Image (tube, rainbow, N blue to C red; front, top):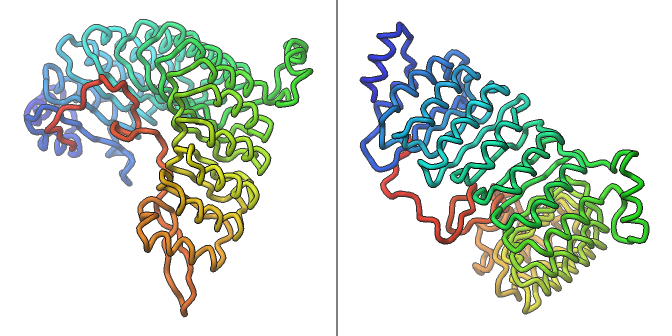
Length: 453
């Protein structure tokens, strides 16, 4: 392909990009090749890919059967460059299964062109993964319309795009008919209360999504025109305030949705009342494995309900409570649940929760007694010397492997201390599949002999 690239640049009087040429020269004739050209490695603007580079790449990849993934994140590709890549997607003989365009300069027209390209992919590919994250508003209506008839896209990552309520409503309508999407990330997308409720309502019927991330929305109570209707729902409820009406709908969704495996609710302002409501729905849910409640307003009272859930929930394996305020009493509640025979919890993060010696020692004892818990993250709490000794002993005995916690023991003048280690709770629930993608067990594994450039 490097010869084709050089010839194309000479024919169209284009400057040769040395990064592109080097990547194409390294391409080998294997079953599956990923060409990586991210612009985020301390490059000058002149070295980042432009629309001309996108045109040249699209021409070189036409008819190629070995390149299945193209990574062009963090470059200067605009709508004009996306048009060339969309043409490549529409080729009948295209083998491209993964296209990563995060953080370019794509606007509405470019997103619409990609949506049209995805329509063509419906009957030609079986496993396509497309990531589109841009700074500006994406034409989400065109994207959602194409996804309604798309049967190939498995993962849609729109985090850090300001799609707001209107965009989320388009996605909710798409989820009513789409039966192939497995992962949906909408973190920090300026979702409001009504759009979160709409997604929760749709997920009552959609049983194919495995992972949903709606972290960091902009949640407020319903507007004045709809507050009267909402008041009738919450007048006799002691669980949630009007600012947490979304939690009621999420809880009701969890009662009937048996397909959801992973739920991210970080930075949603969740209070103890909201945790109580969610726990009520989770008691009737048998499928959820990963619950992310980081960076909320959960205290010991909310953790009491969560601890009771862990003792009776047969499937919850990963819980993230980082950056809450559960303190010692909350840690004791969790310890009692973890040490119980019915708990299957494997991974727990309580980073930055104002936990002192009593709570941390109870967690250490619970881990020693538990037969399932093997990941524990505690950094950011009050690590006094007894705590340092206890966790040092857990790690020395092999009960807590060094790579499965975020602290590392050491001694100074005979005193046991703990330092922060560069490990953290995994961001996605995936033991045998790639962390960004959750698939059915019947999905074939990726081809062997793949090469990454």
